[in-house]
Length: 341
Image 1 (cartoon, rainbow, N blue to C red):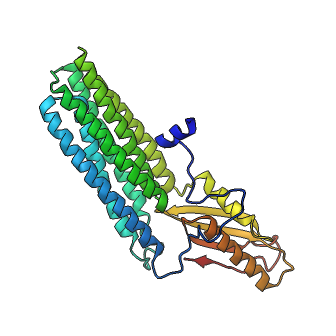
Image 2 (cartoon, one colour; image 1 turned 180 degrees about the vertical axis):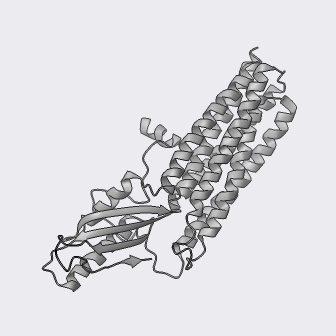
Image 3 (cartoon, rainbow, N blue to C red; image 1 turned 90 degrees about the horizontal axis):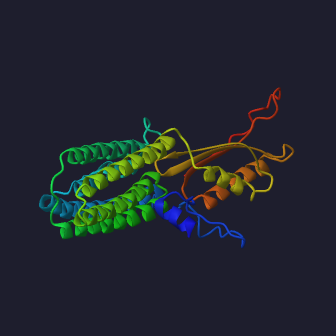
């Protein structure tokens, strides 16, 4: 139960699109290495764009309905929540642009393509969320200093419930699709929407407080929502900056070594991985028995690449090379071997 709650809030550990159990490996159902005519990157970005379009529409409708109630009730808590929902709808725009640009083929200038634009979109999203937190905080503090009457409490409570339902629907869309295509930005945005749904429920609590005769409940709830938004800013910024600095989740390296364990004769000497947008790139140096013929050594490297693609559906490219031999050996550089998809 505790793990389920942590996962719902986004603090649990998530896999990278694969699973292992004690019954062995099915290497046909999990293959992330597409050899057909459809580009895997285009397929995943199309899926991401689909999720963004629907979540944008849902949040836009939610914000419009809430704004109408703000005009009627004068609730600063609902205003803070509405501002944030408008900001959430806006964050879909840079992510949408990033997914479109990620579909472009690599060029001589951008040899890895434009997948990094997704990280840039993440920074823009963080800044938009920060701006919404500042605006919401200002309004809440102003209302604490200069209290004003809040009316239409029934409508106010209904608007809070609408906000929760709209954000939860968006969260489900973004998290599911984000996990399918291994987009950290989309998954993070999904958990962001889920947290926003909880702040919408806080608006309902504020309305109940006002109804019970405590008018300051509304701006206090608005201030609490603002604090929650600042928490989201910190968490989102940390996630995005980790990706921008070529950081990967600990499970990624575990997966690489797990794949190598299924290739007899492959001993990893060095392994690196980084995300370019929502596609993973890996670079490995291995040692093999130096008495093996070159063809046998290349076969081991090729088998390791195949295992990597089998175990890691998010993997876009893998380069497996032979590690240099001991210093002083004139044949230290070995034979390069790489594979790109």
